[in-house]
Amino acid sequence: MKRATVVVTIALILGLAGWLVADQPPSKAPEQGYVPQGWYPHEGGLLKYGVDIRFGEEPDTMPDGWKFGRVSAVTKDAQGDVYVFHRGPKADSVVVFDSEGKYVRSWGRGFFGNPHGIRVDKDGNIWCVDNGNQQVYKFTREGKLLLTLGTKGEIGTDETHFNRPTDIAWDRKTGDFFISDGYGNSRVVKFDKNGKYLKAWGKPGSGPSEFDTVHSIATDSKGMVYVSDRENNRIQIFDTEGKFLKEWTHLGATQGIDITDKDEMFVMTHRNNAENIVYDTLAGRVMKVDVATGKVLGAMESPGHHLDVHDVTGEIFIGSLTGNAIRWYPSPEFKRIRRPRQ
Image 1: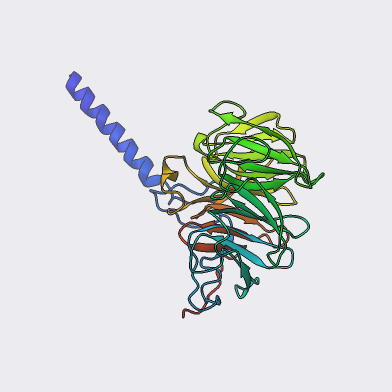
Image 2: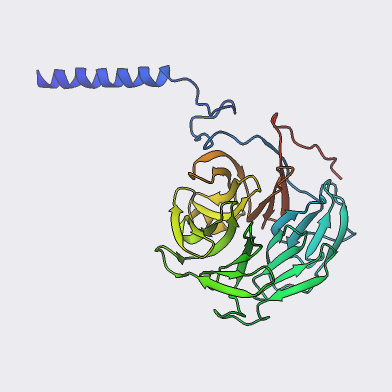
């Protein structure tokens, strides 16, 4: 009697499970169509962007024989010029294109130790972060050197040294700036707008104000500083004086962070630091994030190292160590640029 009861119960359970599976609609994510059952929808829905995956190379407008090496970062200035910062020996280290990918100018071959981050300040100056030479440089748009921070080839934790710095961001109100110092050191260094050292904070570890690979940095209009603490799988948030405010642990191992003038925040991230062990040779995700809450507003797959979002056009530029400069552009109908193949 007991055996018969068990058999009937199992049959009922299996039947109910089969009915539930059969009754489920095809897996979908908001506004992006059919998604196979084995895949999760994109957090917040799929971001509506098209992509130019080989910006500056398809078609190739660079001088004959030039080729990108590992592209660490890309940025765009107010005039529409795009600056690609890469590590290859077959082209100048900073290669500049117009908004359509036509070569304009370049500089820096043999100058940098290991290109890492590149950003444009509000005055149109180009800042390059070099974690090989342990230095940060300020250039004009044409490549004239205006300022050097750090001591070439020397590491340290004082006012005049870095240990493999990674990125730079500015205080929107004062013009003071912050350098994430980053692979060798575990700190954020603050300078005034003229490049005078002000202070530093951070040490190795996993607690508040402690870091394990300070990989990227960004600021918002309210004066908060967002720091990618990559190997700790989090973003730490501070005020401009380095006071710890809070942390976000739900976004994974963030490679890059950028925040527009409208406080639209984007991150280039991997699910965790174990998956990020291949750096950016496999796709992570670009996420749009609400700066007030950390809520993910949308996401899409992309390989990537550093990212930079243009304040006017909304284009997302990504440097990929696969050797690509990637341009994502807002595209409500998901249309991509069809470039002729050479």
